Amino acid sequence: GGTPDMARRIVSSLARNVATAATLQTIAQDASLGDEAGAPAASTVTSYLNMLEDMYVIEGLHGWDAPVRAKSRLRTKPKRYFADPSIPAAALGMGPERLLSDGQTFGLLFESLCVHDLRAYTACLSGAHPGSLRYYGDSDGLEVDVVIELRDGRWAALEIKLGEAKVPDGIRNIERLREKVASNPAARNPKPEFCAVVTATSPFCRYDAAHDVYVFPITALRP
Image (cartoon, rainbow, N blue to C red):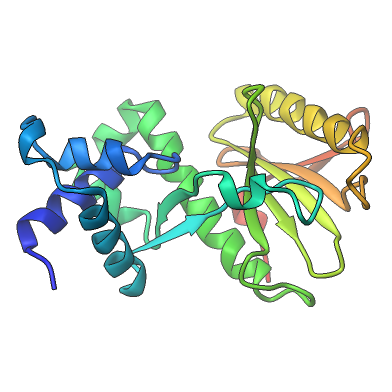
């Protein structure tokens, strides 16, 4: 129902904005190739995004807040991830050597890999549902990469960091989220079941008792 050229442009835009909550306007401007007058309409972009989701090329990660009826659950723009993290690398024309030299892009693709695996493993949990995997972002600039929530209200928060050097940043974000949830009177279950930082390079799994946060490499995940 679309054209290959426009599909490629939109996939390239999604690859450039992978793991972010890019707006329809941003994607349309990217797809215009610099010709604003020729930018596709928002409805056109939406139709292509729907096609890509139907083909299991991309998946959306929606926003989360502790109160189950919080408006932010519906009004927070979804982040879009590719079902296969190699697709954005191919769309950007990046090989392994170039990825290793571009830490920022590599980190976003690593986040995509982690979200892919966490989505698969979360689906195996008793009490999981299609919206169990989400992310947290608010107007204060706080963002936590992944929140897992089950039907009974239990939840967990996870940050994704490429290397050990960024683990303290992930822990700080998690602590801020826990404090916000605990101070929100509308949250009925303020204490998370666990919190963790997932990395690519941690040599082993460990528990940071001082901050009540687990740290483990992506290779430690199991169903």
